[in-house]
Amino acid sequence: MVEPVDDMIPFNGARRWLQPESGRGSGSDAAFFAARPDLVLVAKRAVRALGGGFVRYLDIAGTGVRRVTVDVPDTQRRVARLDIVDVEAPYGLTVRELQVATCAASGLGNQEIAEALGCTRRTVATHLEHVFAKTGATSRALVATLIAAEDAYVAPLPSPDLVLPGPLLAVLRGPVTAPRVAVRAPRPRPALLGAVYPANPSAGGDVVAMRRGAKLAVQELNARGGIAGRRVEHVTVAATSEGLLEAVTALTARGVDAIMLGNFPLPFARPAIAASAAAGAPVLHSMTGAVLSEDVRADPDGLGAVFQVCSTESAYVPGLLRTVRYLEDSGSFQPSRRRLAVLQRESTFDTGVFDRVQRQAAEAGWKLVFLESVPDHTASFSGLIRRLEQAEPDAVSLSIFPEPTLRAFLSTAGALREHTLVHAAWSPVAPGFTRRFGELSEGLVWSTLIGNVNSPVCDGFERRFRAAFGADPGLAAAAVHYDMVNVLAQAWSLVSRPWDFAAVQERLRSTSSFGVTGAHQFVGRGQHGLSYPDDTDDPTRGHPHLAYRISGGTNRRLVPPVLS
Image (tube, rainbow, N blue to C red):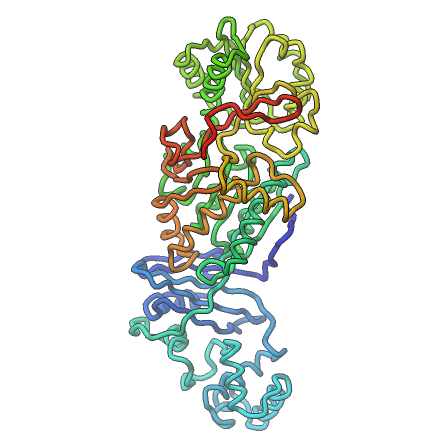
């Protein structure tokens, strides 16, 4: 199921074609463009004729009216983008009246228009009367001014003798080898950012925080004038796991310039990410499944558009064992035999988990005594808890479970928790977690690979978030997606056009930034962000792996030390 959320932008039959200077182009609707080779030819002409500019006109081939925008960036990498959107004709003009107005605007007299359209002069005069009445124009010169202001010239051209703006003629009439012509400074098309977040109720409060964090970032960008004068339009969609692929397919068909994803189960995330990447637009996500970054590493050509904002959840066990050392040093926890148990969420389980965790435990001087895959939505843990107790672990690490699953475990593990440290990944970041879980959360140790860093940047973000939404942002989810928007906006600001996907991807790979959650660089294996100290010992190159213990209903940060 896919449903719109706030900020949804209508589809309007949008289609997109990208045409490089050499080679074949690609479109969001293969059947449509196969039937309209004339539009593909327009894109081919544009990439050779336009430099750093654009033209707009109305396509009247077939039924209805479509707005065609052809845009070419002012960069060495020559590529044209064609956007085609179903529209209502300006001023309520009919298709025939638009043709007459285009001819009149180009200087043709009534007899010349009649010959071009194959009708009588009387018919042309009648159409012109209608054009005057609908537009409020009192002269042919004013009609020409209005048609130019609305970019309402029509194609196919009614006559080869029309005198129209040079750039428009260059893309509509050719020849393909026409020299580059001067074009007006473009009125920036908004940068279109698509975002998909889970719709299912069990997704938890972090989903609301993510959406609000992204929304706040977009609002702030636009309040500052957008990106180089270009507004950011935010398309937000809620989708079930089963509807995720449909959602991203719809967004790519709309011609979005980038896609951001919330957290979805891997079996549904992988095909959706692949479909998004195939369209070329950058895909930024906050999921931590190691297989996602491994997919990108294994297929850099097919998945090079995919960027994982944080490290992978394989860092959670080393982070727990590092936290245990901190607790030992402080005297608040003393493991008797250093025995570790791990419960891995089924949707992120991979064949390398056992060897990886066993190695991580051994390196920290621990022994892995229990590792099982657990279905994401488990309602009863009675049997598993009995097996855990028999293994006699000193610490149990839980991967990222939905809140109902985590609640089911904690509700059953009361006796186990009396002598065993229980660690949860990510889930407690959601605003209001301790309130919802009450006594079940008391004493729980949890961590996140990325979250709010104590800094002036973070303090300011939290104040603005509370002012905007009247709610607490929580300790990670809102900040992560706030930062994701700003990381993307920085890349957009460094290129000529947000839809120049190759240029945007290169900027994402080559630049770094600092936000609410720390430093962002996509230089980890498979284009994932760096976690400190898991992936780098330099805190200025990554975001800190943060650990907390819940005491008295309050999240108390443990390690690493607070960054200033």
